[in-house]
Length: 116
Image (cartoon, rainbow, N blue to C red):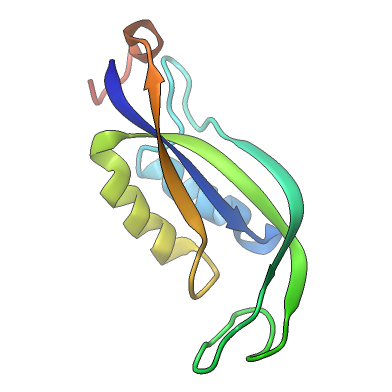
């Protein structure tokens, strides 16, 4: 088995496609003979911009509740750092929320990947 991670991030609709495309271009979202793969669903997020923050949406010290998308995609282990940099450079938020989780995928699912 090769090292793969699932990237999960939250983004408003206004920045979603730009961010997804940047991550796809960096090599995320590939599995077997498929590319640009992801899963997304809409939900509600909230945050309270603290003192000294520079929120893109909302105001300092005022609770902001808004619709966001949760997006998931696979990332090869060797591209995790690149994808973190890409996410931070292309996400509309000052402090984007994201996580990586180790996943296990069989060799047959990875056939045809250029990074093997």
